[in-house]
Amino acid sequence: MAQYLINSIAKEGSVISITLVGKANPIKVDCRTKQVTSYTGREVKYFPSTATTTGTELNCGEKWAIAVIKDWIKAPFNTSAFAQLELFIANLDLIEQTYDLPNECPKGYIKWLRDNEKTISIRTLHEFEDNIKMEQFTKEDKEVYEKMSEQWRAESQIMRWYVSEENKELRKKFNQILKTSAKGFDWCLYNSLDAWYCSFIRNNLGKDAFGENWVEHLDGNRDFRYNIKTFEYARDKERNDKVLANEAKIKAIEQLSNEEFVIIVPSDIEQFTQEGQMQNNCVGSYYHNSMARGRNLIYFIRHTATPRRSYITNRYNVHDRQTVESRIKNNDNNNDSKARELIKRIDEKIRELLSAEQ
Image (cartoon, rainbow, N blue to C red; front, side, top):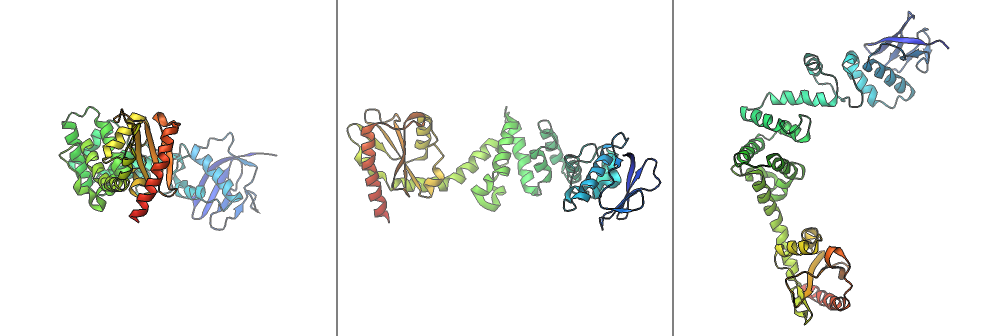
């Protein structure tokens, strides 16, 4: 079967015309009716198989367009790529790759691409949008952006956040904190900045600590690390108060201490941290949220002779009404038979104490 090389592709109105070498009539595809007219002048159901892009001098964009049209005719319900084609069919020469084409073409984008010798992609669309927003930058904003550009590419998340941030007060505070950090000779400035971004922008530390008006609590006279710690303390204080209040409900189990073992119910948050460090486990912070909700309770069992040295970390589950975890160092199971007998008595006491609370 003879093959005919595709020579060009263009769109006029709702009709896409595809010319072939050696053929007077083009293949026509009506975008509204999905009607395909072959180069023979007859209406056909599918794109003529005798028309090929193999061996042609078509550019990447034109070859992509032909492939999209063929797929769309076969499966007209698959419209995403075809919608992209309709956006850029008049500028196929600006397509050099097809894996990240944008789904929009804002006013001025194509002219900006040609003026700056760039090609169509999501990356350049973001760059175009950022350039528009940066026209509204203050002198200080521009200085900070240049400083950040030393570390991050323009398309990185942190740079796109800075450009896109609509809260001018937040950007002003951020600028102040950056300058304060730089003046303080923060040798890990960019690491500190990234930590601030992850905490406040990605993980919503600000809202968790102070609600919707969190920006006013940022301290521009302090560095990134100080602001992180301040907000973490504010966020955790209410939770930690609840943790310790729930722990206090079982303080009486310490009375079960004997000649061999001493029972310790933590009375400050630092004790959890120290236990986690000595035991090489996650008790330092992992269960704090569930403890604040009253779902779990933590107590320690240590040798009476060495009460400052960790031995067994225990987790009592309120729903299960028993100690569900009893671990020695490195999360190994507690196999001390005497300690396990003591835990049975502790469970009974905790059930009694919690029932009395109700």
